[in-house]
Every structure is written in C-alpha cells, then in structure tokens.
Amino acid sequence: MSQPGESPYVIIVGGGKLGFHLAKHLIDRDFEVTVIEKDPVRAEWIEHHLGPDTVMVGDGDEMAFLATTGIERARFVVGVTGDDEDNLIACQLAKVKFNVPRTIARVNNPGNVQVFKALGIDVAVSATELLMGLIEAELGGADTVRGVAVRSSGAAFVDLALPDVSDKIGKRLADISLPEGDMVVCVVRAGKPVIPRPDLLVEPNDELIIYSQLLDVEAMRETLAGS
Amino acid sequence: MKVVILGCGRVGARLARQLDAEGHKVAIIDERMAAFDRLGRDFKGEMVLGNGIDEGVLRRAGIESADCFAAVTNGDNRNLMASQIAKRIFGVRRVITRLYDPIRQEVYDDLGLESFCPTTLGADLVRNYFLNGVNIGRTVVPDPAAARRFS
Image 1 (cartoon, chains in turn purple, red):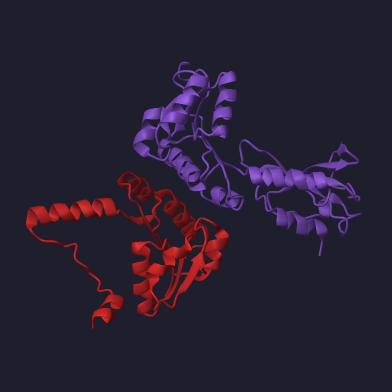
Image 2 (image 1 turned 180 degrees about the horizontal axis):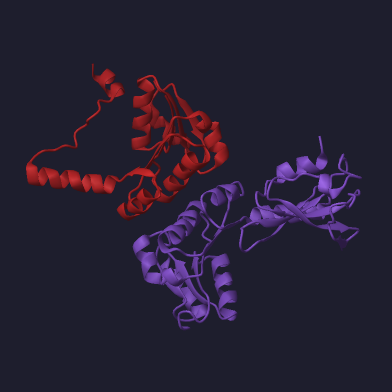
C-alpha cells in the first residue's frame, strides 16, 4: 500500500460493477483506493482482482466503521451503491464528521440530483440523466446534453440546442438573460466552436454550451425559446 | 394541523390513526399497498403509494403545506434522507426521524435534525424497570381508536 500523503486517497462506498471498475482505474493511475463493501463474498472477489488492502467489509454509513478506514485523510469519498439514501448518508458523514474535501455520489433517481446538492453533496451524478441527454441529442429532437462537472463549484456544462422556434434568433448573446450564475462559454455553429462575444448574434441551429450552477434545464429552455 | 407520515408500519399506522381520530389532516406514505391495511376502515386520511425519498411522491402527499413530518420506515438512511428533504427543501416546521442506530442519532443531532431512537429508549425502559421497579413504558397517550373499540 502506498504511503499516506503520497498519492490521493479515495474511498469508494459500494463494490458493485461501478465501484469495482472505478477502483480498478484509479489504482491503475496510482491512486490509493479503499472499496467499502457490505457483502463479504463480493469483497473477497474484489480483493482477488484488485489485490490486498483494496477492500474493507462494512457499512459505508456506519460512523465507527468509517473511522477505521483512514477516512480523515481521504481526498474523495465516492458513494456508488444502488441506493440513493445510502450514497447520500455516506457522503454526508464523510463531509460533516470527517471533513472530506470532495464527496461524489451516484444518483439512481434523477430527481435526486438537485436534492443531493441542496443537502451538501459536492457532485451528484445521474447515469440516467446523462444517457437521456445523449440519446435525446443523438435523435436530434431536443436538445440537451449535460457534461462534465466542474471541480471547484460542482456546476456542470450543459449543451443546449437553440429551439427551432425562438424569439432569441437574431438577438445579441448579451441580451439573453440566463439564470444567475449561468453563463454561455461557447457557441457551436455548424459543428465549430465560436467565441461567445457579447455582441454575437444568435443564429438558427446554434448550440450553446452553458456553464451552469443551478442546472435548471427547464428554465434555460424557456429562456432560449422566449416568451 | 396537517401531518405527513412516511412509513405505514406499526408506529406509522398507529400515529396516523391517532392523529386522524383527533381531527388532524393526515397523509401517510408507503410503498406497499398492503401496509395500509393497518390503518383500519375508520381512517379518513390520505394514503399515498410510493417511495418516500422522491420529491414528487412527497408533493403528492401535500408536503408543501404540511406542518409536521415523521419518517418512520425501517431504514435509517431512508428516514434521514426524507427528513432532510422535508426540512431543508420544503421547509416543514416540525420534522422528526426514527433512527435505530444510536450513533447515527448523535451525528444527525449535530446537524439539527430532531430524532428518536427506539433502541436507546427500549434499553433505558428496561434498565429503569430493573433498577426502580417502575415500568414507564406503558402507553402515555391513550389511543382514541382503541379506546372506542373497547368502550
């Protein structure tokens, strides 16, 4: 096992497929990783594949147990069990009781993304939401892809196609008022990036890449569609 | 008073029946239809089928206008999550959470979440009876539904 402080220490709560592969990749990149898994049989399987000292059997939401994992020196705690409530509580404990700087949670019910943020989780990732966005974008219908989460703020980039019917077409970018904290960081026109100068006129079929804190896609759509 | 209860087990159902019989507006949530059988035929409140850690389900139960919320499912984490949604997102004034794990109770005390722990309560009751010969675990508040049955 690597010396404390040498490489970033990551605790992964939940040793399912996602937890296992995440751990594997992190270990390949020289992170120090502990997977927390409830099921001893599964834990043994993980240890067999990832090597000794990579997994501990226990509950990621159990204070006394967490205290034995070296959590106070963890840079990240990642909750990837199949249950939203378990991911939330594990991340909250890490944050509140052990001062872990970054908590990342898998969200199974996309409706919980906003809830997790409101309850103090740094980054909430919904595979459902990501896949929906990709499929919708692929089908060309509407219009949204949520992208990478931003490290320091937990915001994300959202790729939003301008609706066909929009009273914003022909308007200056500066005149489109997005929710506070949101900002157009790039315009994609005919597949090429364009710098979003304030006086850039919006054209049909433009895609806007928006840095968004709120991630309120509905509000953005309404703004872009106009009244 | 408008009350939303999450979990129609023994505690949830009893609480719902009591408050309903006292004339309060009660909505109770459970994900198993059969759980509502516990409420009996007299129950006039609302039964909401669904997962209590879903904003949509909580809205259907009228959480936005609720004065009180109790999370009494069998899952500590589920209770904790639902209670935090009720308190922090919907601003419900009185929110209480059942937690079987005393350590978790300590943690969430610090976060300002009101809770009770049947584990410590039970142990204290038994200990008190052994040491003092007094059983303070008898029903403190009479159950009006039960009272009516026996009168």
